[in-house]
Amino acid sequence: MPFYSEKVMDHFLNPRNVGEIKNADGIGEVGNPICGDMMTFYIKVRDNRIKEVKFKTFGCGAAIAVSSMVSEMALGKTLEEAMNLTNSNVAKALGGLPSNKIHCSNLGAEALHKAIENYKSKFKGE
Ligand code: FES
Image 1: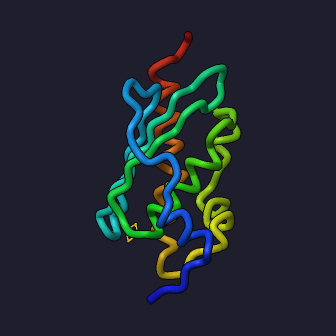
Image 2: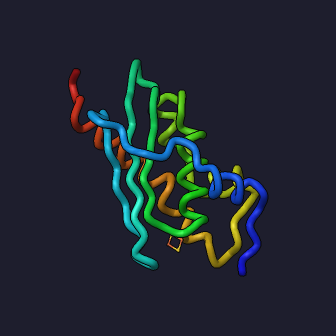
Image 3: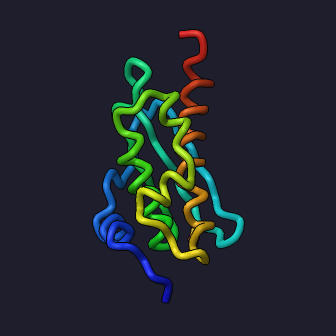
C-alpha cells in the first residue's frame, strides 16, 4: 500500500470542483496509457482568466487528488499562468506522491492545458 500525504488523502476524499460545465469554453481530455484511466477538464474563461473549472476523472485515488489540486491551482489564474502549471508543481503541492504513483500525476496538468488549447482554438481572433 503506497504512502499518501495528508493532502492527497484530503483531495481524494473531498475532491474540489468535481463535475462538468455545460457550455464549457474549453474541454481537455486525456488518457493514461499505463493504466487506461481517463480525465476530462472543463473551463470557463473570462478576461483571459479561468473563472470556473470542473473535472471528471475515472481513475485511481492519486489521479483524483491530482485533478482536484490542479482545479484548485488553476482557478482565477490567467491562461498563461495556468499553462505554466506542471505535473511536478502539482505533485509538490500535494506533498509528494509515492514513486509508483508519479505516472498518475501526469494527467492533471496535461488535461488542463488541453482544455486551454481547446478554448484558444475555438475563440481564435475574437
Ligand atoms: Fe491510473 Fe493512477 S493508476 S492514473
